[in-house]
Amino acid sequence: MTDRPTVLQDGPDVLLAVQVQPRASRNQLVAHPPENFTIRLTAPPVEGAANTACCAFLAELLGLAKSRVVLARGETSRHKSLRIRNADAGAILARLRSAASPQR
Image (cartoon, rainbow, N blue to C red):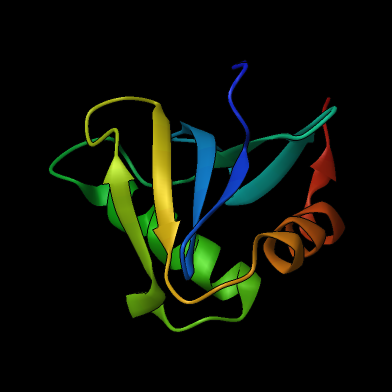
């Protein structure tokens, strides 16, 4: 996937690099060893629907308010960087690991 860190503390915020797969059969977080994640979404990649669904799905998965998860980079790309406001990188990574399905 990528050589840069998946989860990075950026001051009080966390930057999360993920790959997004739109038009999937269901919403799902998939782990790729060692520390990479794919977010599969049922939303189509049109008019920002997948971006909105990505932020909402991740917020729900992490138990955060939707307003705390915003798209930082990759509006038209499958590789996205999400900013999670006022969060701890270690806690976010632990939650992602426990919520993710293994790669198939």
